[in-house]
Amino acid sequence: MEEQFESLEKIKIDSLEEILGRKFPVLNDGFIRVIDYMGGDESIVQAARVSYGKGTKKVNEDKGLIRYLLRNFHTTPFEMCEIKLHVRVPMDTWRQWIRHRTANVNEYSTRYSLAIDSTQKTDPDEWRFQAKDNKQGSEGFFDNAIGSKLTEREEELQQFARDIYQERLQLGVAREQARKDLPLSTYTEAYWKIDLHNLLNFLALRMDSHAQIEIRSYASVIGNEIVSRWCPIAWEAFQDYRMNSMSFTGPEIEIMKILFAGDAAGAKKLAEEFGWLNEINGKLSRNRERLEFEDKLETLGLKKPW
Ligand SMILES: Cc1cc2nc3c(=O)[nH]c(=O)nc-3n(C[C@H](O)[C@H](O)[C@H](O)COP(=O)(O)OP(=O)(O)OC[C@H]3O[C@@H](n4cnc5c(N)ncnc54)[C@H](O)[C@@H]3O)c2cc1C
Image 1 (cartoon, rainbow, N blue to C red):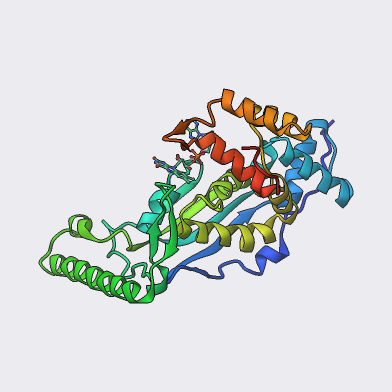
Image 2 (cartoon, rainbow, N blue to C red):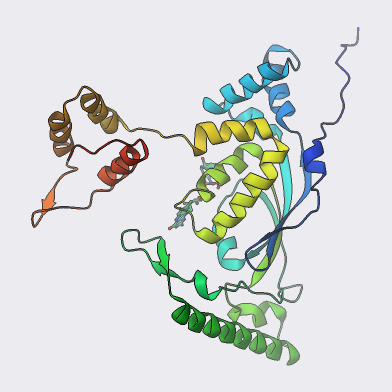
């Protein structure tokens, strides 16, 4: 006898349908648009329950299951949801973005077509200083006088590069070669399709304060404007268990146990044994593990024991 399955309807998320194709602006001329999607919170539950042959249950039980799955890294049910975005991004940001290998990508071809005539522009109040302590970061902003000069020079450079590009094309130089001196601020476009599990990994890395502001601007729009509409329960769980959570290393837990027992001197002694408190010329030397732990203590409103 033929096996009977439940009848199915395609999962449609009204709040996401409402924004299909809508342009979410990012930076001066970038954007993100949702082109298509598959699944939603319901499909995460549907996939998880296939293991024991049961369908969707009550909403609160489904919510509990999604939160349990996300909290405990049961990731494959999240791969049942997919989303396809159309993005316009400056090439330097795209260079960071494309490192996430678990997406399917099709990028605008500047061999085939003219390079997009648009560049990422920096307003006078947006120029950032090199961070002192973080070689990969920035901190603070230039004042308006220097910022205006930097913006003026940026405009000159971008215009000069574009003029030479046009000049080469007019002489008949191939597009694939004429493009080689276009600045990294030139916008590119791509279709980018990814499943929810890998998208959340992307967002965890690129919404984080350590990510560069430019890619963070894109990731924030994807998270706050798109995923929050698409899979609100998974999004909330992601906030609770990934973005706003904190993990502790083995050594940190050892120190905290002693600290919570009220023995600050003992906690300091253990940190010394870990080599976190070495000194150079009478000053604490830079130790990344210690600094990361200090950040965590600060977030928790706790005083460091040294
Ligand atoms: C703040 C920050 C600074 C960074 N700085 C640098 C830098 O200085 N230089 C630099 O080169 N990169 C840098 N990166 C890029 C980083 O190293 C990763 O390449 C990028 O974040 C993509 O992460 P991913 O590999 O986890 O993502 P994905 O490519 O989407 O992969 C997701 C997961 O799939 C698995 N996976 C995918 N492909 C493979 C594979 N081929 N083999 C094994 N496992 C695989 C891994 O578990 C991986 O975590 C930086 C990233 C961030 C967020």
